[in-house]
Each structure stands twice: as structure tokens, then as C-alpha cells.
Length: 259
Image: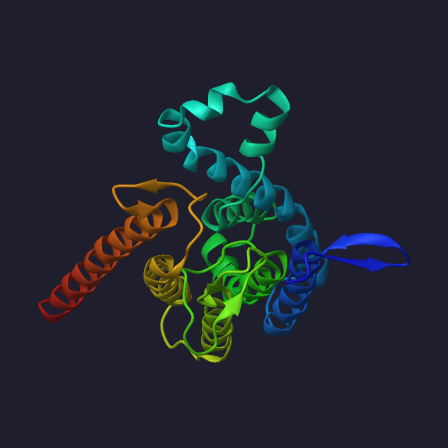
């Protein structure tokens, strides 16, 4: 782990640096895959930069919400001074909240500039796992989001000198694979299929990976983390949506046969 590096004696957090690299890589990739579309480079750059606000606010807000059960059941929280309470509440991020915040900003910009929300989001969602993958590298370097205790092959030793499962590296690899799949897959149906792929594959992956994580700061309710509950909710919504879309398609085909 290397939480901080120094550039000309200036401390730079590795997590922030990895996220920045990932964000730049995501913007460049987005510009490339939208090169033959109606979206200008100026709009892509503008929407990408403004969405950072939603990313930060959403991730922080979801993190604070995830701490509510811990705060309710932890008397020690109420004995902390104001500064320590703020540090505890503002100390982390939740990916799902950040993604929701960023997408909300992008949707508002699409409406403002008269672009199709679903069409543009179908491009944006392809680079989300790419950016997320770099973020997980930052987690490894910073020593957060670590895995369960594990001393088998390919284990890593964290700053607490405990051998742990390399869950950050596993998620990074899976995220890069998902990004490649979404970017290079040729979809023959509507662009919404790309969004469906992401909202089905990633929540499934995240739900399983959470069982391999050893940090407990992200909220636990009925044995499942905040991210697992959100993943389940997304998957249920996807099942309902796909069933509804399939039912509509069958209804249209049936209607055409008799008219």
C-alpha cells in the first residue's frame, strides 16, 4: 500500500490520483466511442466535469445514510466530540450513491441541451466500470475496502499486518473486463440494452464480492451490506423491467399477426 506519494514535496493521495486517472481515461474513451454521434466534444467534457459534483455529493450522502444503523446501535458515537463525529460521518464514499448523483446531473444536462437521456447514458455507462476499476486500484493503494482474512495464494498484507483476500484487485479485473465487454459489444437492439447489461452484471458481481470484504464501515443490516441491499434492489427492478419489456414485445407481435 502507498496511501500518499510526494510530487516535489507536495503530498498527493493515491486514491484521488487513481480516480483522476480513471476519470481522464473514461472521458477519452467516451469521446472515442461517440466520435460518430451527435454529441460534441465540448458537451462531453462539460457534462463529465459537472457530473463530478453529483458524483461527490451522491457518494458522500449514501455513505452517511449507510451509517445510520451503526449510529443507532453504537453508544460510543454519542460520546465523540463534534470534530470526531464529522470525521466519522464524512470519512467515506459509497459507489452506488456517486453513480446515481453523476447520472442525475448528466440526465439534467441532456434535457437542458435537448439530447436523448437514454441514448447518451448508454454511452456513459460503458466507461463507468473503467473509471470504477481505477478507483478500486486507489482503494488498494490507500488500504481501504480490504478483503476478509485470508493467507492462501495471492493474499496481500494490509497496513494492519494481516493477510487478506485481494478483493480490490479481483474487482478491478472484473470491472475492466466488464468495461471491455460493454465498449466492444455490438448491440443489435436499442441502446437501452447496454444499460440493462450493466445494471444486471455489475450488481450481481458486487453482491457476491461483498462477501469477500472484511471492512465493516460500509453498513450492515440483516447480514448484508448497504451495497448488497442496493444491488438486490437494482436486480429486482431489472427483472421487473425485462419482464415488462418482454410482455410488451409479445403483445406487439401478437397485435401485428392479427392486423
